Amino acid sequence: MKTRQTRYPRYIRAGFLTGLLALVGGCASIEPWVQPYERGFLADPIMNAERDPLMSAHRRHVFDVREGASGAIGTPGGGCGCN
Amino acid sequence: MLLRVIAALLCVLGAPAAAQVLPDDRSDLLYHHYDGGGVQVSGPALLVRKGFADRVSLSAGYYQDTISGASPDVLATASPYTEQRDEVTLGIDYLHADSLISLAWTQSEENDYDGQTLSLGVSHEVFGGMTTVSLGYAHGSDTVGHRDTDFEAGLERRTYWLGLSQVITSTLLINLNYEGILEEGFLGNPYRAKRVLGVFADEEFYPGTRTANAVAIQGVKYLQPGASAQLSYRYYRDTWALTAHTVELQYSRYLADRRWLLDVRYRHYTQSAASFYSDNFEQEFTYMARDKELSTFKSNSLGVSASYVLFERPGAFFTSGRAIASYDYVQFDYADYSDAFRNPDVPYSFGAHILNFNLSLWY
Image (cartoon, rainbow over all chains, first blue to last red):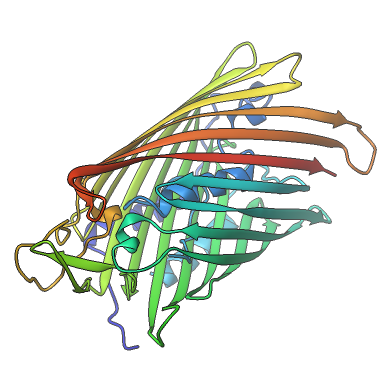
């Protein structure tokens, strides 16, 4: 099937470039205000919304196939691959 | 765009960062069940992950849906059916220069729908581990068929995402995510028909492209002792003029010296209809759809999960095991969609039950 190349609007492409600049900005050193030894609570599994990957993926799949919206929540990039 | 993603990967590989870690070595076995709107879906799923030399983690997954029944929009022109969907996923995560690079391939097969997706993502910690930036791209290629005819059409899907996870305090984490989805090809459903002046006519007509943008923000707060609260919001908009808002709340808490972990969650979703949707058209248009997923509706769901630590044996082959049960009730309320045969004058609504049982083993 012949398809037409779809282009993102300019503001979306600008957003991606901003992301890249943020990455480049990582080269600069900024003093962390929460030290590694203070991150014990953050590392607790209770803070991870995707701590059980199969259950999270299933729950997201249930909503993705029944709602018009999808994306930006959970592990990205999957797509449905179903009807 | 692909070149930009590659450029980002190269930048990430060269940037200084804090230590990244590979995902845990674990296996999960799931049984899932959904019942709602005249459709039952159930089946097993398995996900196995194992790391090697602290550099590479391989994963393999299998997911099965057995679907029976039919929703009202399909029942209008077709009969209830039973079919099976099998999905296989293979993934590799590679830790290099403090960046985590993930490559995954997924194949999904039904008797009338095949899909393949290849995704590449990278995440990288910067600012002394205070910020994690992630970027990715996925390409999906689907083939849509029909059980009773030789109908066949293609669908291409390109997905881009950008994520930022930021440590705010020692107990607060904020996640920002953007996802863009471009689809081209057959975006309808060959079993559904449009309704014109109260009569089900020919098949629907959909545009050949759809571009969607979704942004989400999530805050996760640790609440002492041994509890957390999560709040997230997502805004979605696409070129079919469909706009959606999603709000999710979750409260989690350890009990009995962390042997039990309980989650209570609430989710609210609302969307406006696509510009070419109608339950009952008054005349013919270029694009016409009667898919209830494109109508104006809202859903509310309430769920609970209970997780129990079965054993913890440091040093043994299986270091720990956990069993989880979860239940969600979802209520869908449609504003401009009706069950045309059984109750044509009343907006359609239904409740759905989602049940999961999961066994997890760490090694």
